[in-house]
Image (cartoon, rainbow, N blue to C red; front, side, top):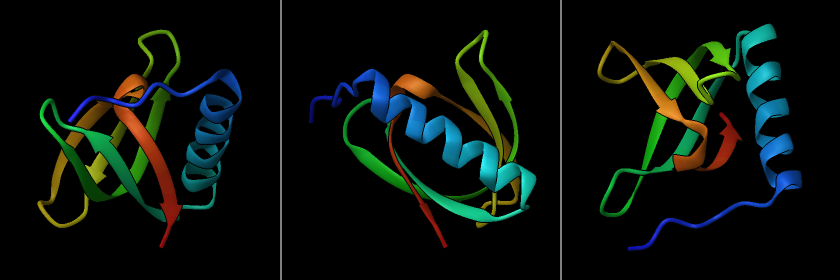
Amino acid sequence: MEKAILDEQQLEELEFAFQRAKSDDLPVVIKHHNGFDYSSTKVKVLGLDPGARKIRCLDIEEKINTSLKFEDIFSVDFV
């Protein structure tokens, strides 16, 4: 499945959601492209790296630290 391309407004909304999740310590479900299809992962946001355009997070189910590229993220939902 092809990766969707988000416009600037959608990217700003995602970044705002990440900042809120980090500052309020809220878990979120991120829908992201995994190279072949879309996956949904429940995470706790640890940090944002705007320069590298990545988000650092803790996968709540797998209990591992991971990072996702902004360009691979399709949506963010608060749990």
